[in-house]
Length: 437
Image (tube, rainbow, N blue to C red; front, side, top):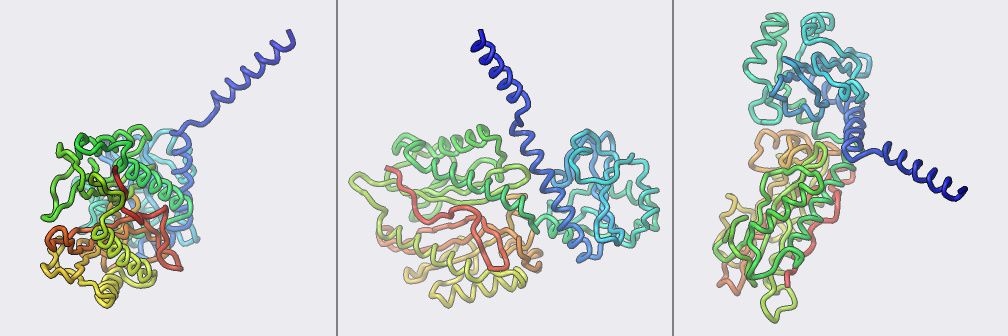
């Protein structure tokens, strides 16, 4: 009888512990709360003062969230809701939510004041800010969340006195998102590890059977892994493609993978409020082959050599544009040939043509911070700061003798952080072409 009583007691204790065990949803919510509090404490004062902003207002409407809503903490908005940050000169930024409900917002620990959206005018008048940053932006979509009607409403409600003080939050939003605290660096690194693990499994015989598996099969397998792990997607369907002598052969479609194919993946996953951007490669061995062909290995090694140049020369304290020019100088000096136009290599088989696109990464696959990439000209003017994260991306084109001298494009991309020491990887990077047997 005593033994049975003990067993029953242990079972009840186990059930009780299970009932109170935190699920994945709660763990992720708590981690985002920690990140949010640290960003508000450590990053927000710095970037508001650098950008000469006294007050930052972000507007949400029912059914229309601002792109920064996840950063600030999601909640229910009946009509209009406002996240308001005010520099009151005491070393800390005051945080208020007006009209953003639910207990999760009130309990996330990040806000000082909860009030009705009808109190906005009185709230602003009491603080009398000289500059009010709003989320409208010419160059950065994720900083351009303010609708025209919301702009009109703010202008009418606050009156001309304060409407004349409106400024764009474009640079402020970029700085706030792209300067990182330790908890979000750790969370992003976890996302990166999941990204590369799924991609590397996708390029194996676990998933691919030559002559049977299609590119779409691989892409859908990767999407299923995202669903199974409660992960979002940086770019929608993963790009799974074949490169041949004449460039792209097929992309994430019903093309059947054959022996001798050179494969690449370009994709990213979403975890919490973070989105990665990475690439991986594979070669499908021909019958009788046991190793990667020497010419393809040489092409891949050329890409790695260029990546080493990027890693050694990206530093904090220069603008992204200055860094872009310096990197291209160093690439040319190392014997490579920097291209003028993407995906248009020269016909000269002696030249290894290169183009770089080291863009911001973090809260989007293509982030909103400084960008060492020709396709982000505004962000090329931004200064690189410690804790900025980049997708270290390049494309190197090497002639393949078996292709009659036509060039194989090797695209390399992995996510990294800039510290005071330079570039540091956030997870194990791509150092080899995977082999499919």
